[in-house]
Image (cartoon, rainbow, N blue to C red):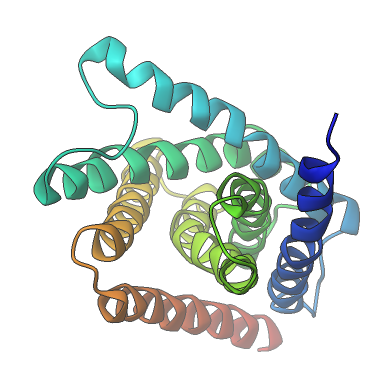
Length: 232
């Protein structure tokens, strides 16, 4: 058997692992005053990596309800697929894993933890996803995706991570918490879908970049607000 697939995977593993580690450290440093246990961050990364499987299964289950399992058709159909299927599936899977495991841990005790935990799950998801795309990309495209994809996934997931943390750690009623979490998750899924649609259908990387930049500003503002209130 040829060793070409093994050689390819080894060549792609370096940039993918490097990009994932870089962004894990970045988001970990956002919680530098009270850092989370490293084993919890690894658990989040592992959950995200494993989350690719249920996402893949959901994509392939779409034809059972009359929906496409992959992007196809006209530009409008591609845009609908991104917004109506990609965003909800990927953000829904990542949120579910975080809610079932990470948000139940005793270390989940302040709003910024929602950002950190959501980011670790997203980075794990992006790292495995990058392996699926690597075979169709040149080495420089692999390198660019290895460093940008974890960040972009983290930004989308940070929205529901921050929203869920505020809700779950508040003294609100269960209905108020449910509304905030739902709105955060819907916003995350919608922005994820719009980002992908801007790249796939509009061929407008500048628009996708603007979406990512706006979310990044929001995330940084929230992180700094939390750190400031903690120091007070």
